[in-house]
Image 1 (cartoon, rainbow, N blue to C red):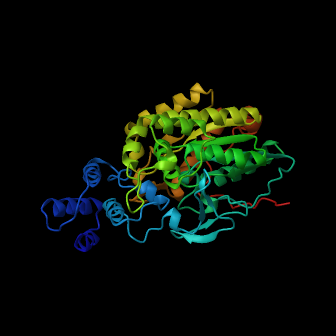
Image 2: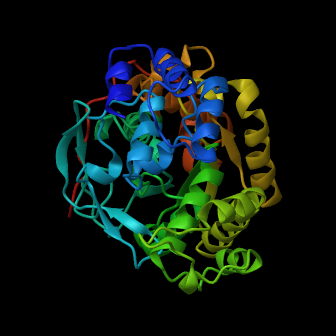
Image 3: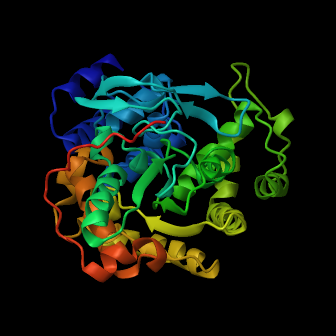
Length: 411
């Protein structure tokens, strides 16, 4: 293992590292026991434009659930440096394994991540200060999402949601609208659709939003799998979520009697994941239906946003099937869906990622998502909330630099 790491460290190009690993292992230069899972990782790595990121446990790694030597090898195959900070190791969240949410952002965080300020407010949002009480004359938009929407790797003021908030407020008064806009960011890294549903129920609805932006990506099926597997592994109670309970029962699993090896590792996890794979989209479709029911009951407008990833995994031909599936799901529930996945199509997507091993949008990526979102508001935004910019033909070409941040009043 040490020999392999030394050789990989000398190779700057990630493809060279993959090739060196395959050659070394193939010719037996070092002895390393390989499971069939590891063989699949390397096979996928040679075909994937993102070098096997999903199979190599990248997204579990984001929340810090991989810590074995084998997982460290798999992460090295996708080119990730050993000093890259994962969400679970960043000190910005707290685990709650007895809760369906499993983890939440910590309150009042202020630290630097990847050279950018990462802050949270007193209410555990990746956002500016805000009070729960809704002031008169304020339009509130609640954003439900995962790491792309939370703004992993960019500063709080650079997220597409805060750029949009600033833009809306800049447009309102000149166009004769006295209202003020607040976009409240309830997104948390790696949150699955079920966690987003729970976040709406417990937190977002208390802020009396007028609109909910439900953000999705092509990774949502994977996040559903990770979330359900983690709850089973931790023994988290989720009986009140009928859609999850039903699928676990269909798979023949009793959460409290999982088979484990002497180290406590869940023996049948891979078998369960394989069973679950064809059902992940159906689970997410049911979750969207529940969000629709609850927002309509609350008198809240709901809009689905399909958010792009940076890098080559979201190129048009690769994302087409997933985008169509999400659109059909939203249309079946009669929910407006704004497809923003073409935000990066006129750019080199690799230049919009945080790093070659991390496909979260960088500052420029968030700027492009914001611009595409403005275009959607101008053409499709609900008249009663966005009519002032649609009628006036607001500035659809915002300045490249983010507006100066405006701190919300906290009564």
